[in-house]
Length: 336
Image 1 (cartoon, rainbow, N blue to C red):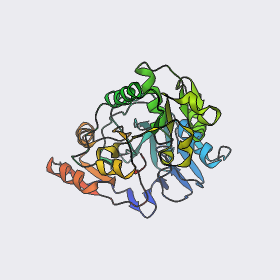
Image 2: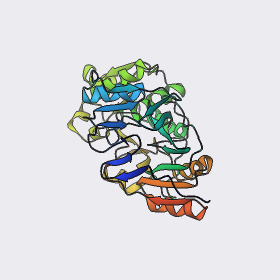
Image 3: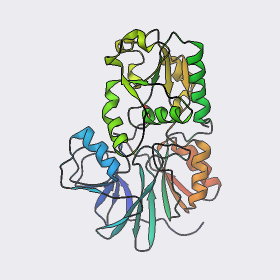
């Protein structure tokens, strides 16, 4: 693969800076102008002057940072284009969480795509990842090691339902990240035919309302704090991972601790959290999906960021890509 990589987007302290547009993509500090790929806190910070993102991401940021009325917020629908300085900006689906997007940047006949976080498999709560060719593809690598091969989430949730049937006297407390993972688990359970009420921690209410507002049907949900302990025997409870071993969980009848995360592939992490039922369910691409994506996009130049960068760089280089690690600071997905 020949040619040189575009030079008008570059890594700097604080993120990726686009000089001809004078904006940052997912900056790690407050800046005057930002393009935001999705609402997770390591990508969507507070305090920016102007923000370009999907309507869903702006709603999530508004709920988290109370910035809804800031005039500098501009919603961009998937596929629509705007000009920022001398750069054309589009957003296309990333398949990570509600409203997540890849940032497509075009300048002087060159195209750069910043993937943000993404996955390639079915998720009824967000638009599926779209492939678009480009000159430079900047990819995440959260699970960028060959050991990470995510199983089918239906099979993993089948383990939850089987355990529920085996222990009808116990609540099943599912630790799931507040934005994205919790809603995906709820809706996937509905797709699998689970029509009973699902009980939730109150911290999920705000994000759940945003998902519902944008057309995601979560079915009947009930707050744990408004329910008698005995009523939750044999039921599924979804809550932030931090609650698995907190006093809050004592409100549940003899809970089975469940944690849904791609990191549950690592048994030591499950043991550290005293997880009885680890479910390998991730909102990120696994090793095979990362490599398939590079092949599908076909960009001659690949930059790898926030994750196991060197392994993916090596694999990409072996297949003929011009690849390098960015080693950006400030993007953490341990709680995914």
